[in-house]
Image (tube, rainbow, N blue to C red; front, top):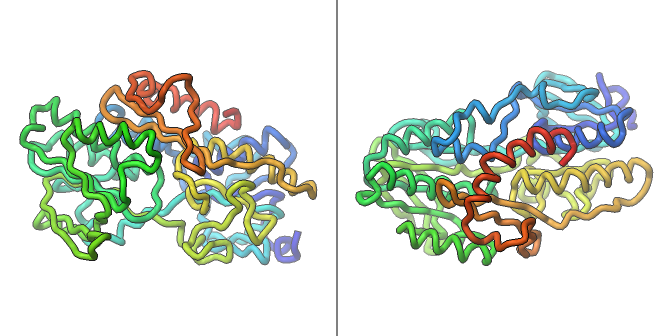
Amino acid sequence: MTATARSAEASFRVLIVGGGTAGIAVAARLRRTKPDLSIGLIEPSATHFYQPLWTLVGAGVYPREVTARPEASVVPPGVEWIRDAAIELAPDEGVVRTAGGRRIGYDFLVLAPGIQLDWERIPGLKEALGRDGVCSNYSYDTVTSTWEALRSFRGGTALFTMPDTPIKCGGAPQKIMYLADDHFRRSGVRDRSRIVFASAIGSIFAVEKYARTLRGVVERKGIETLFRHNLVEIRPDRREAVLANLETGTRETIGYDLLHVTPPMSAPDFVKQSPLADAAGWIDVDRHTLQHRRYADVFALGDASNLPTARTGAGVRKQAPVLVENLLAVMRGEAPPRRYDGYTSCPLITGYGRVVLAEFDYEGRPVETFPFDQSKERLSMYLLKKYALPRLYWHGMLKGLA
């Protein structure tokens, strides 16, 4: 422990920043593996969210309340919850400073602060969100606006966007679009509707095995795609969306009657401003060991890390045991023994009752769980997404058991 860490008002053998999926999963595994370990957890929110269900909330399948539980109910017994927000990382001092003015010291630091939603980067978005057809599944506060927009849609143009930044759950921007198409057909308005997917990336999905299926879904549903088009402005008074064509550098305007926005995202500001960030602002860790490249006493996982894989809860489920084993090894003075292969998963909902379960690694190779072709749309995978995965999350992953 450094002299500075000793002078902090509180200090822990392991300090975790972030009480979301990644932080709680690591805390639970550490407590199970080493019950006497001194662990602190910095997390400001009183509520813990199961975010993967927000797509189904936005499609009217679930009320949003089923995705929320008190944070106190998921913090493992024996872990000290510091209900405050981290605002500065000082790795040379072995200290994290908080919004409440506290200095929390550590011997080892685990960073799992999640991702920041940068709504303000799109002019017009914040004031438009939640009214006149503008909606988003990407926060608990806005997710109900999506179902309201879908229910009140009577035809016209429904525009769904994907930004030019890394985002959590990269498949979610198109999942709600497929569900919207189904809903419009059920409500009798699809024949007078235009559905457009404006995506800053160049294809429907990065892994070709699953992309083939999704291209077929897009064709079957009659959805227009505008790849390499990035939403840069909303003019809510005219119901217009301004898209930057990333190939030509020009701008195009599309009128909308419904607009589902996936906001740009980045690492939290206190991460970007810290010595722990890479040039793009993400926590700079080894992609296999999850140990920081310059500070051996720092580890990270989840959305704020620079791991070159999709940012999903399924990825965290595989990262957490690797991180915990490697952290404990380093604490003993040993080299990290475990390697994370980039595994991640995305249950791609293609309609009510249909899911393509994409699972793949750093190289984009399918790494599938079930003994059948997961690139096919299946009811069984929809039921897995709707019922089994939430139970696995609350009762397995957050308990350090899965």
